[in-house]
Amino acid sequence: MTDSTFFEIKKFLKRKTRLKTLTISFQKCHKFTSKGLNYLNQSLETLTSLQNLKLDFSWCSQIYGNGLNSLFTNGLKGLVSLQYLGLIFPYCSYISDVGFSSIGECFVGLSSLQTIYFLFNDCTEITDKGLSYLSEGLKKLGSLRNIHLDFQSCVKITDIGLNHIGKSLKGLASLQNIRLSFRGCSGITDLGLKDCGENLKGIGSLKKFSIFLNYCPQVTRTGVEVLKDELKKILPLEDLSINL
Image (cartoon, rainbow, N blue to C red; front, side, top):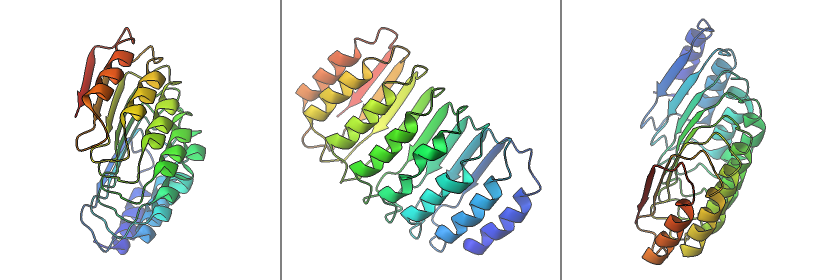
């Protein structure tokens, strides 16, 4: 499939303005580029009744950060009824921090969003700066209940990025379920886990927390225990999983 495929999809979606759920999967379409995402944006702008959206572009190696950013500046911005957003872009090695630079402005209008499912594992150009942009967006989502963030093997992410995420989540009073993956992020240390725990312990609604830290060489059992001790202070917490 190529960018022109989405031009045809755009014409179809223009006739489906009452659509509630949309799933699009373009896995391993190596000829699909950011230009195709622009066609998608034009389609999404008309779907103001959409409640559930999942976009899977795994292994689409020609998508760049500016293409992802265009989703936030154009396609997603007007989806005011959206409750579930799944963005799946693993192994898109050209996606960089700029992909998240407009997410804050986008999320201001998505006040109904309850679940975020973001997979960006092995997007090795994403750094702490990208997570700072993402965190500014997350702060705007007062209705968010569930969040799944996967940045496995994003080797430029450090404690600073983890701290950005923790700070953004601690003010979300409705949050019940957090699942994070930083497998293979060698810049995350015990100190980052301590700061993460201190940030998250104030989420009084949290029921389930899991984090994956496998192959993080600077994380030790001591750091894991410190994180556990902080999270156990959350009284509603029912399920705690820390994978090392």
